[in-house]
Amino acid sequence: MKRIKNIFLTFILAVASVSCVSKLAYTEPDLQLPEKFQYTATADTASIANLEWKQFFNDPILQDLIEKGIKNNYDLQIALKQVASSQEKLKQAKFLQYPDVGFAVSAQISKPSENSMNGKSLNSFLGQSHVEDYNAAFNLSWEADIWGKIKNQQEVSRMQYLQTYEATKAVQTQVVAAIAQGYYNLLMLDKQIQIAKANLELSTNTLSITEKMWQSGDTTSLGVQQATAQKQSTELLITQLEQNIAIQENALSILVGENPTKINRTIEMSDTSLPQNISAGLPAAMVSRRPDVRQQELVLLESNSIVGIAQANMYPALKITANGGVNSFKFDNWFQIPASLFGSVLGGITQPIFQKRQLKTDLNVAKIQREKNVLAFRQSVLNAVGEVSDAMVSNESLKVQEQKATEQVATLKNGIKSAEMLYKGGMANYLEVITAQGNSLQAELNLASVKRQRLSSIVDLYRALGGGWK
Image 1 (cartoon, rainbow, N blue to C red):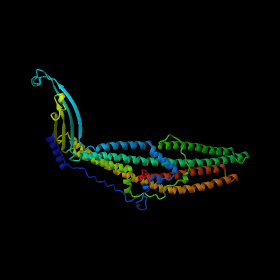
Image 2: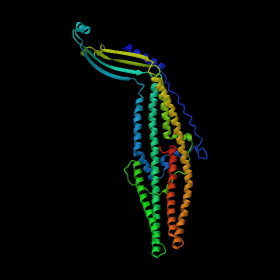
Image 3: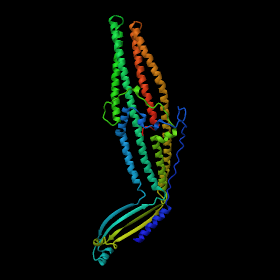
Image 4: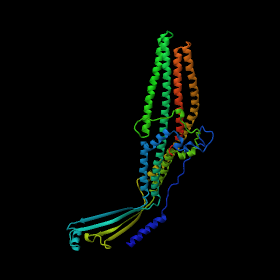
């Protein structure tokens, strides 16, 4: 046993003296990032994405909805389970450098033919016609990581775990943004139904005046019909808005992982506030902060390690196997120590010679996959920069649109007052009053929509920059 131990230690020392890790160096692709985002005056290092979502959204009700979403949203929970699964694989990968050890117990009885050489020998030497063999042994197998194959396999597991972690962060940014968008859409619908109900009151008053004028002969029945149709259109709009509110409440409830229910609101859309200093920061910082872009870079790093594994498979492999235990041809002295002890150690180097081009093909395919992942990484960065630019131009444009829409609403509201006064004085007809009311209604509905779009553009910018996972 001492000699076997010395041989085993000699192999370990020999492997330790030649082992090295041949992990391929990773060079980040040239992403050709701009110095600053389009539609920004200066390259500011600050970014709204650095704010935690509780700092970015200061509405308590919205904060409560987001809190529930992060805790209960099923897409997010599924992503977290994927992280847990990858974490288990990562734990297992840490043991790849250790040997495989097994224990086996076996018993065998064989009876050769009495006319065979073995049969006659048994009768002559043992005085019996069968032979027994009892074996209990530990088996060990270990491959030296000379070329870094095992290190690269561990690196692959680590990259896959980090990918699931970044994917979870990406899902959270989407969930946070979707909840905020749904909430602001709900506030817009509240505002629109408020506008519609106020317009319904105007339409009811106009109809009442028109009916009195018809009864006095100052207008025709067509005027009554037109005023009635205007009132009915507003009633139909209110019904549609009520339907949209219920559907939006249901969608928001599902987003936060609850059964469809009413969503309490204590503020109006005009009372909402988001950070006024909309700073995007630097494109380079966005790349390192945005989870989906970071995930794509990790895919590239994983493919780099896979190339290393494919390359190592083409080199010689040093494997050591050993086994030892107790063996006997009689059951009653099977565990008699030290007579029944046995052991063996085998070390060997194997070099693949001809594998039907499989190894070379695997290496070439791995390199091509790495090149594809370089392109995918660049594309993800380009898409991210594009999303940021889109959100910024939308926000700037919607600022102007909101100002113009506000001015239009003020003008058309004054127009309603003028039309009603002229109508009562007989200087305008019913069509002018109805038209003024219809135009004012559409303008107010449009203003509410523009305000919601502007809020959405700021949320989009926050998400596009990588905000929402902190």
